Image: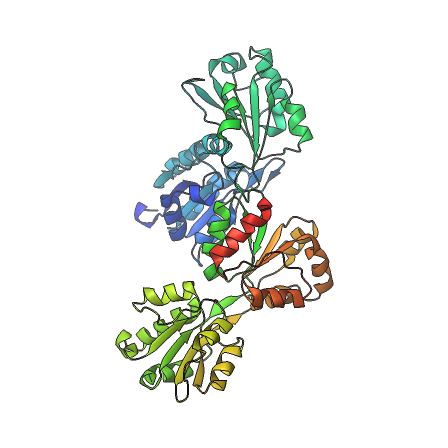
Length: 512
């Protein structure tokens, strides 16, 4: 086959797990790949970057479980590339640090397939850093060695020269060695390392589930066993481990280790999840709402073409702003059609969305809910005033009803729809049943009702599972719906914003 018909293979490191440590080049290649052949990844969310038509093939290997032998993996990469496809071989950490990427590259060379290596942030340096352990320090050591821990140090022909390794470098980092930790410690002591040498074992490093234990070569095996440390993990040996108590930054964040359900629509959840993750939480994304276009745009189109007849335009959500202005532009119009109309926004985030469109709202109520808008209009003469409210198909009627009572003519048009995603609840139900969830968050009444609906037939079990789960609601209306459905609400912030909700969650877990 001529080279012109060949695809290309990319040996890509995915890093140790923290999504922020994926390189820009890796993300770009995942997005463009025809085929992604991936190992066990510390964070499978990276696969969400793949195109809808990409073929995803799992070939993961872990202790005692091999989905596919290495030789078969090598042949698979070549086979796909020879069909003219762009193949991403996605590997945890770095492909050339105990990742067998060198062997795969040799196979590609032998097959005459062009390839590229994309280094990843290796767990060998990232995990100790997240545990507060610098691998070198001028006051401690200027040398570091990386060693595989995935071989029996007592076997007859080890690839490791223990006599040189044990005292040859100030810091020793063992990858994939948790299962052999007792034998590793024994070999190091037997070959000259002092028994009281500090050791740290870091489980699931760079992720919210990270756990670090410390000891010495004499006792680290017993400590790790007692603390339930299991693979995957990194072992760090050396005096440098003493700095952990001073430099630990990752595991002391206010929400570290807390598992929090985020039920917000996937399109809107990223900012909320990013804030919680930055504070140390492990976010369990479980969208109970999906934002979709309206079934018919006729109502909104008629309203847009008749904007000259309206005196007020009221937005009750960021989604309403997005869909309304998008439709204006789709119809070939621009902001000049709003030159004589006043604009109200229900809260600061909605107002911010309006401002991004080039319009400063004329009204933003002090209380960020429908009742706040109603109060803001109190005292105004609304007789003969025409008001347009572009919003979701299903929403509370209190705002249009009260405005009509004040004498206004109110038109409510469907700008978008909120529907329940077709998402299985089996995995989350299992976590709830095992008591592995600390908090559930709800940002609207519909997230509450949809959450319950997604456990259809298990409502009684769900209430039982949720008894020990804290519940955070963005505002009183959502909290009322939550309580009416039998859940106890732990948090309702004073301000009904994502930022205030995040702050209240921190205060709750900090005991403030």
